[in-house]
Length: 274
Image 1 (cartoon, rainbow, N blue to C red):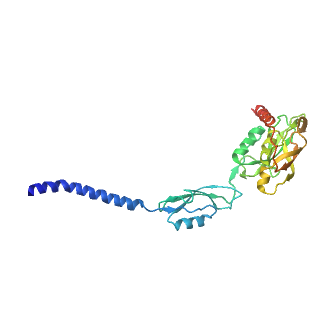
Image 2 (image 1 turned 135 degrees about the horizontal axis):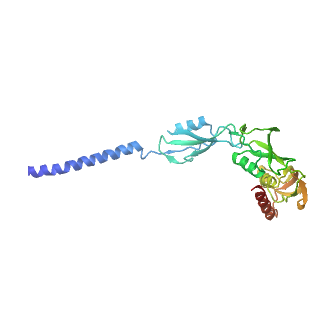
């Protein structure tokens, strides 16, 4: 009997030890990973970095800034995005990744645009986040080629520092015989669309004379052109760099841009600059 009991014990001992090790490991893993502990991530958007760190510390979380952007419509030096999102459940000591709104726009090196075509120059500026204030034309054999780049009325050299979001003036060649272009039909366009269309047409926006029934910023953003001067027409031509004044209305019923004309304008601009 003793011999049989010893055999059973020798068989069970390793099994018991293995079970105890597994149980200990399971309990340790549960403790190490805090399996049943969860923390709700607070909404950090709009907070300063110090406020965000404080809010996270109170919940046992850690803040880490990973990026910054610049948005003039949001409070400076405030949180604009976070990962994980607000109300997500995470484990204690989790890092919460934060994107801040910079206090100043990013500084850039001004590109060299001289000798580029108008299309190439505008595309380069658009990629960098620099705006085109206006197009100015001067006599030059190369029509719509950049002959100077101005910032606040003075030439800005390549690699000179400029803030993202600033506006520059492109000085372009007008040809040697006073080139003129047709007055484009702007009716049905929003104010945001006007800039690109006029740039393609080698023209500038003049005065926004009125915006009927535009009581809020949203009304103005959605308003469309219902009247312009000079009047549109392929036979009604204007000097390169000329201006067109517009009237806007928030009542957009029946207002739609002439897509066929815009498509032909885009095709012409592409062919001229390739």
